Length: 387
Image (tube, rainbow, N blue to C red):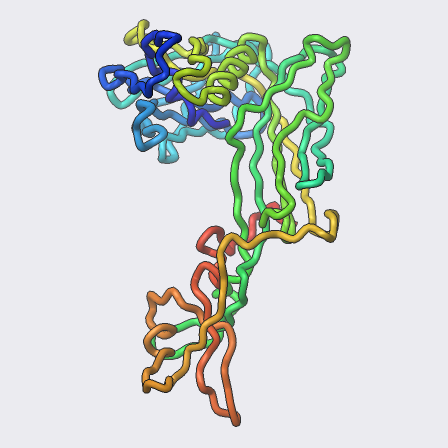
């Protein structure tokens, strides 16, 4: 789930004359931009519940939102049961699996550090059907990933998805050496920086509806595209898709949000409309709150795609320009480039291979960190789910 573009929803724009096409900067300095943003769902099933709290900022701001820290959150039932959440940091709050009773309704209760109180509407549990499959089609310029699902009882009709991507990739060059500040040593397996893992999450609002169909079935709902030259497809790629059942009201909220966050390009385009959620400020009923808290179990499915499943003609593009330099113990000018560039503990140059003559070590071939150290944009820690 990503609400980074909620900024657009808090800007009050002046009506602009049709004949005026001069650049215009709306007067927004006095607009209150400190609205609470609530992201997450109450997970009624056997997975943990995660709620993220942040605040909106003005459209001219340099940050996308500020975390709400030190709040007290709880899930509460219409029978008075209370399930507290714990703060994890960075505005994220969580609870262990709740396994909620389907016969009751539930809401989210928030009390901020400033003692402002917010409550979501009480909602019945909306059961999410399993994801039938996650797949992909091969296109000329990459792959298109999709999800299939259905509800045999015809009770769902409205769906939302998000996803997390993970991929395995390599540095351009393998460095077998590491400096201790005085000399170069061979790297141990724990010190390798050639093979890494990276990840990303969805940033688009992904929706589907079968309300106009006789059967409650969603076929090949588009998730994301990966281009053929992407490093994501170099070795192995994985995507974890999560599915959420929505009420019609929740679907309308997300549909409006999708339109407002993805179609706005300038102040001359369609203006942001009101996007009413189901969260209210009890302390100040006139204060807008951004978000919609659904109550549902979350279904998920993961797939892996390996390089040998894709066209052999596809070649990924390394994200940096890479080359090799010669680092000698003694240059023609008498300098020791090995000591100057490869031995410092904070070096950004890495030895790739040795240079020798007559069984004498003369120096090393080297490259810069971007081309030898995959941890610059990933981690060497293998995910637990990786296979």
